[in-house]
Length: 241
Image (cartoon, rainbow, N blue to C red; front, side, top):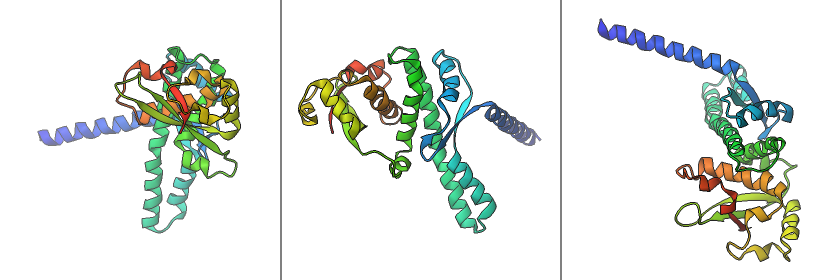
């Protein structure tokens, strides 16, 4: 009898949890992604970013319009059970990217709130967009409109013992601006280790390409590093990969 009662309580708790989850899901503001890019407009993004930068705990979620369409197609138009199962598993697997998008937006707002970024708040939608495009890089790179990019190493020996690094891809059209600002002959002149700080490159490149790559690295590659030194830009140098 006790076992049956315990099972009933567990079942009711699970049902309540599911109902609460669906209710929260319905209340959450949605940020749409399609083709590996955020398609929600800046105005709507700012409605989330402003309160997040003030420390408010908003309900929001990223949704992938392509996956929604694929799931709908699999459930309604695919008759073969194996194919249907394969497509639904693919959709389920890609939801990890959506969770990472949410973590990234919260982290970007936190970094701005804590003073790690000195740009205007109206620059944050662009940073969020680039961060999401990094997550969906395979989809973005398949686009015929994708600009050619050059990889740069961003590295440090001030965050933890030993050197750590991540890669930031910078469009070829922007690389010339770095060379000009640094007053050097070519990118190859940046090969001398620790000669150039990321703070010496143009701010537009720093915020559009370095910081999104840093956030991605911090949330995926360097999750064990808890030191705020990781987010302090003066700790990072840059050179060609």
